[in-house]
Length: 291
Image 1 (cartoon, rainbow, N blue to C red):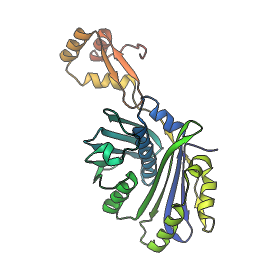
Image 2 (cartoon, helix red, strand yellow):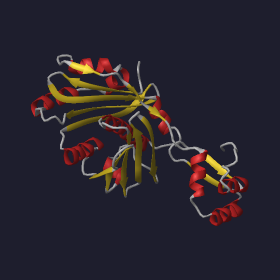
Image 3 (cartoon, rainbow, N blue to C red):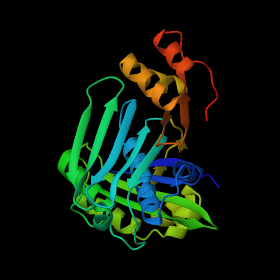
Image 4 (cartoon, helix red, strand yellow):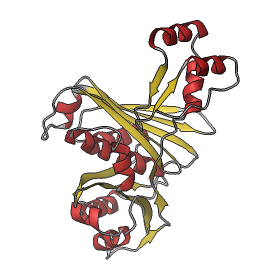
């Protein structure tokens, strides 16, 4: 079964587009660096699915970052993805969390920030409040406000035979002005019937056939979704080089080394006095192993 892939599809004669994403290994890798509580892992899965679906709507090369910020026990959930469907993400929380906690109980008062950064062109940022009961509702509100395109999202997470799964679907009226709300509402009603066991256990083509077998659907080649962190020892060294040398050397003198931790993948990078000297002498950090 093809997992960790995104399928885009169109309905013949109807100006509505759809997307279906199914995540397995990539979701497990993204959440494997920390012992996330169940509700946080669930929210990360939903946001990873949503980011994949949103990235597929972009018509340029670049990246998108979707982050939920709040004043509740979960202060931040963030996913970053690009046009190649390469994803990374992390979350921050404090204290015990009830398994049945709602979005508002987890995040408190907050908002969603969507940042789009094309490789060529201007950076764009949109913000929408956490006013809906679910992440789906909040993101649909974002599309209604910023894109003026009728959009529905279905975001699901769960476990199959002990393996974490995340999946979801998107329907959207196309911006050609030819879409009719009746057509959209009809397709949304069909999509609403999708079951978790179908999204987690069936091939995308079988899911689409079950939902839309009475429609003419054109399905495009799937795109693989992968987890990959962009951190490296070299990038960590560049971050250190941006600090005043005297301040860095004082930190090393006090603790023996500087340790940098990546929240996205859990990697640790350590730099001792020799490494620091090499960084500021522009010879590059010494090639110590990652600890």
